[in-house]
Amino acid sequence: MMATQKTILRYPSLSVASAFEKEQALIHRVEQGELNEALLLWQPDAQTLVLPAGQKWPQTPELRRALSALGWQIQSRRTGGAPVPQLPGVINVSYLTVWPNNTPYHIQTAYQYFCTILQSFFHQLGITTTVGDTPGSYCDGDYNLNIAGKKVVGTAQRILHLGAGAGKQTVMLAQACLLIDADCQHIVAPVSLCNQLCGHPDRIEAEVHTPLSAHLDELPAIEQLFQLLTQAFLARPPLVVGKA
Image (cartoon, rainbow, N blue to C red):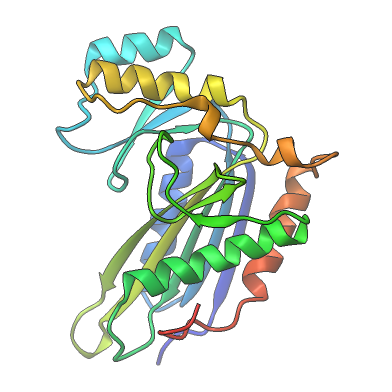
């Protein structure tokens, strides 16, 4: 029997390593049939540059020393295509949901569904966002959320095939990184340094990013923002392929 249980976890201050562990624990619970939907919201407790695992982004002693001199820790993860800066003032979202049975996975549908939920969060704050790429931004993609052409949210996605045989499930893991109250010059500095030391020519431009705080007279407290995000996810209908 498929689980119908859902869970929501919210952490206003959490290390990046602990966040990744909690995300993996949720994946395990889905695999064990305990959950079919999960939402993890967290804010980093320290400045940490997250690198995708692999030879493209080697964590050399030189890189570690250079980032440490800037006040940044370093952490790797199995997903992602480029370095992502994490620090207080950024909210992360991990959303797990079981894909409808006997239905082919469509990456565009999955991204559109996820972005629509995130857009409803901004709509609650009276802010209009658009979905698309943002040239010059770190970890750029086709499904960023932008405010007046500037990136406020980056998204990523993994598809997990959990279980075996008749009980095998396709699970969407969608992730988002929301710039809430961060200095854009400050957050791109470690990414630019990493690109330089790892031999990547991509030029990251601070001015193509924007935090939520720049568009509000008063920024809500972190718990209020978590609640608005939670409401946005709770208000969404079940995932239906072909609809967003």
